Length: 66
Length: 262
Image 1 (tube, each protein chain N blue to C red):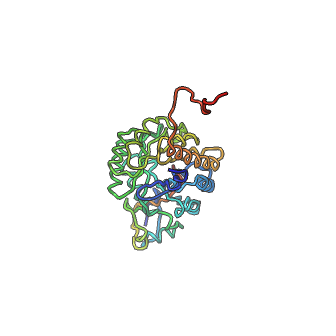
Image 2 (tube, helix red, strand yellow):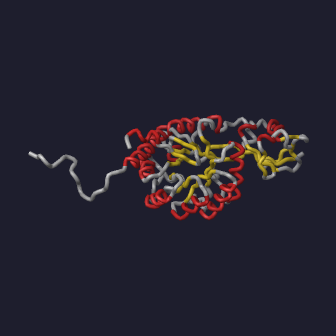
Image 3 (spheres, rainbow over the protein chains, first blue to last red):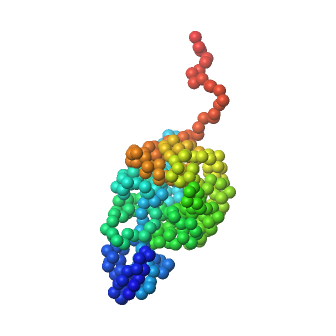
């Protein structure tokens, strides 16, 4: 299935949870936040929230800023 | 009041107590290690941070929180780069999920050249965020009427600019800053425009509850040394404010008594 992550199209094997997606991309789940189709995904739901084809996902973290 | 009274002089923002009145930004540093050293030297307890997309192509790239420990510093996520209330709310919801706290810095800019705040949009965003349960520290113009409206909306700190962001021009409008301080029941912090230590001291002498700065430290030739200077300046300015300065006179007044002159 194709999923858009941070504006880039990526292909993954379905079914896949948010947690599995983060692991597949080597992203540390404790240091980031995830938005799925404009809705926040709470950290507690990373294992249960499934990703579907066509989903738009934003993965953000803190960087330096004023 | 005695000389020790400043030890109990805490800054309370949204129910949290801080002993440092200097908030520093984490942008523009050569690297996160220098940033961490500057935060330490500044004695800061709060650091502002931005929320951005992770680097998908290089997930092992250094992350801010590997250098600046969120357990040691209160992270103050900002909305830098947001131009509408909806963008700001979306960004800070993500920040709250990433960090798990509700204290945020709202900054809605209106123009890329001046980085002046868009006040109508700032007011609207502040209202949205306060309704969502955020504790909003708000970057704003130095207009006392705007500041009052932001306080009425429920912002937990009012943060007028001293001068444009990154300009280093110092407090350009001390009268307005003073008016905002006098009318506000929540803390007032000068945010943006400080260039060197004396600027920070002037802001504090006016009665500001704190100062927020980024470029003045990050763009100094020796950022860690400047961070230390700012720490002293903020403390000195605060103490001078608390001590109560002497009245200004037009003419001289001798310090040595004239009585008993030979």
